[in-house]
Image (cartoon, rainbow, N blue to C red; front, side, top):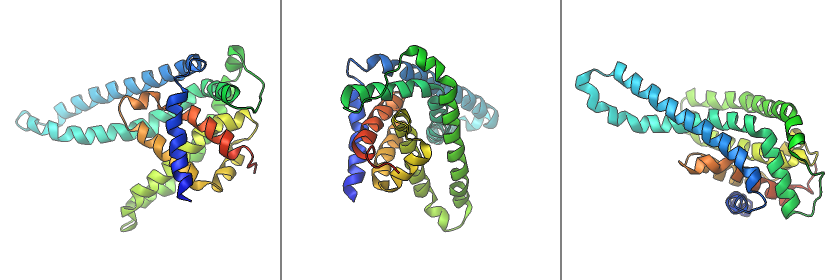
Length: 242
């Protein structure tokens, strides 16, 4: 069902349109600020460390090699940004992402849920972070066997593609979980729901992964993905309760 894959991509792209709507802008702002601060700090720190490392590693007469190493550094930055700072940003912004998912649902869906206010968000900080830590543990446990594949001859040729598919799967779970959790569908249930729509998950998560790797776009990818994933769950998974 290749249609599910392209449908997942469309939901992610639809998030770009939804986050610009006047009724949602205030709830996009905080996740956006958190994302910009973390990503900017990570890039600034990475550049500083890299320049110092190059100065200590290369003698003056090999300084010209530095420009050859910058593309490798850029690739490393993208990997670090995705695997570290995206997870950290989601951990910190979790209560606000949940509020954003709620506002999207109230504005664009006929599925009603109790409306939260900012005091509710403050009260949900600790529970939301606990949920995010559980998702992080799930991610870490499953990432180990995928990382081992990189060290197995022959199989390691396919390892990067398997890792990308796993990352897409995780991003779909990560961003859809905010809306699902608001509707009392918890992480284990959400995984079961997506198991029946794997291509939908891979399409959405793959598009989110690509956006994470694009400069400037990666600053807005979290609120965009939360918004798009909310629409995805309401349209495609709400009635598929595991």
